[in-house]
Length: 96
Image (tube, rainbow, N blue to C red; front, side, top):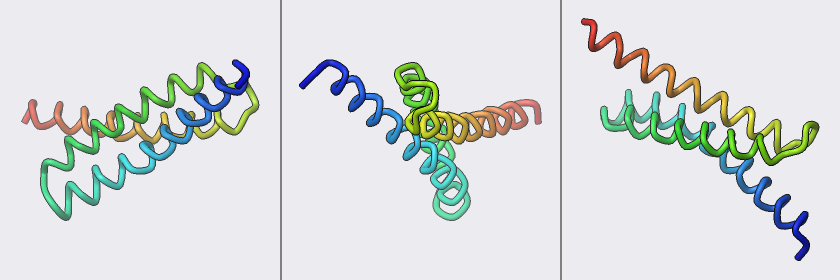
């Protein structure tokens, strides 16, 4: 396999992983946290951090106009939203 093909495959996998984690993070965070148990708030935040990390790495590897870059950006933003929500909740809980 050529080096370009391996790099494309890795970037594709990272972007899809970021998108999957980014979509999964709010579901685990909100639905799991409300309906099942409080531990899902933390698990959702961890999955959100994973989405941010994967999205960041995939964006660095992807070309400017590729779908991988868009998928990575969406995953990164969804994950960052959950992480910010979690941090705001923790900050307000500490103040109260």
